[in-house]
Image 1 (tube, rainbow, N blue to C red):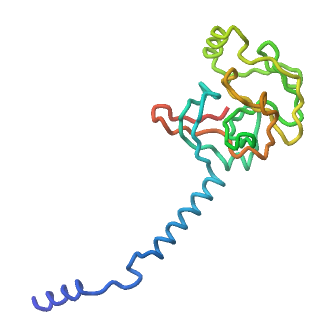
Image 2 (cartoon, rainbow, N blue to C red):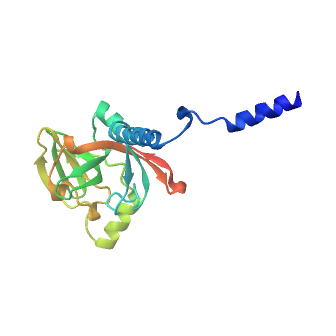
Image 3 (tube, rainbow, N blue to C red):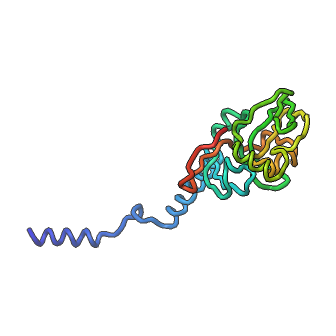
Length: 200
């Protein structure tokens, strides 16, 4: 009985791997292809990885923060006023994060630091009051320099950064085509002590 068990054990050890048990280059290629397809589909249809560069959205978003922006909700729901969006800028050949201020067909104006949409004042509660006051004290100027009135063409939006004195936005580039927006909102995951969701 003991010899039979020993022989069975030896036979098991000497049993060659079947082809399906081997993980070769073909399997690696399949796994790599699957991973690439998954990443492409995820970043195209679900969420876009983002890295905040610069201070144009400070203090809402801070330089070098990392996270994801919502592609799916944008594709399903579109954009609304004051949404935070990721937009591709042809002139720069890069993506920027900005905030939707005026929608297609609306007339936008800033005068004496007050935002007007269709000639009616609109509150900007997303702006950090302490930071606005600090910048106005330091510069001796309005937080948002006056412009307009300007009418936004159909199919386009007026975008601005929250850090108005330090943002290149529609005041520089003009209105942005809606089809250049790729996602909206931001789930910030790094640094860990600043994990949060930024929408409006």
